[in-house]
Length: 380
Picture (cartoon, rainbow, N blue to C red):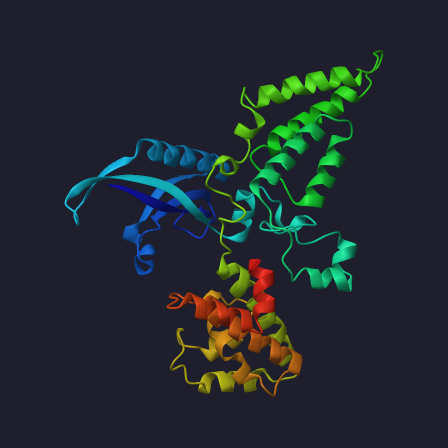
């Protein structure tokens, strides 16, 4: 028998020190996607793969890709105790987990710095357009889905631009306009651009090099930096996996996107309003007297939350999102109260650890008023 084994890969930067001093390392872990969800996050079921303070995330993923492809090509012999026979395991990458900046790099996207900032679709536009009523509303709608083939072609276009006169400005405009930037080959492009600038300068007592000669020299430099590999073999290794598309196979990470994103900023604004109107103490009293029975959350420490309101973490925001409408119903403007009501509904819909009936859950998503927020966050 042959079993397919979906592999979940997690990549992030961590500190290599036990002390608080930050010592950046990139670390890669793997999990077996066939395991029940309650087992996935147990330490015993998470396999350490690699870490390095020097290698870039894409360098690590190139090694991971080669290992998975080798294992899939040859198969891994194992013993199935249920059927009492030897079986062959064929692994494949099902998705990559991580935070938004890391997943943007995995998709060869520049993130929020570009006009089209989403790694999943092409939503966005110029600053002028996004500040208009039409442009602002369009940010809450799904743009044209990205795909890895278009990303590869865009990266290849950037290599062509690097050989031309005025390459620095052309590359910057290209990245800003479409949001694509390959971290793997950025250093190569920068080296070619800088060499092009120096070659096009006229030295004292010498004639300027012709554009054709400059292009020839830059092409040789590019090939030298690529070390004999083609452009497609040198760029983001995830873009070359036939059964994997990083744009669709990097699921949105809800901690930073929702709790430390939408909820955190609404909490900051609400706390500022309460403090301005001298209502923070009333809010603290209500929070302190609130029964936490039935909440899938730790104890709500009213004193801590109000005193350190600017330094809360995910678990605090997850708890607050469920109870805020009951605490501020007469303390804030109606627009703020309505926003918290939608946020509470949004958090409940997202944090489903088990979905018994997919059809019923999908209908509840579609009919939810918070679907407007959901669609903008997750490209639904």
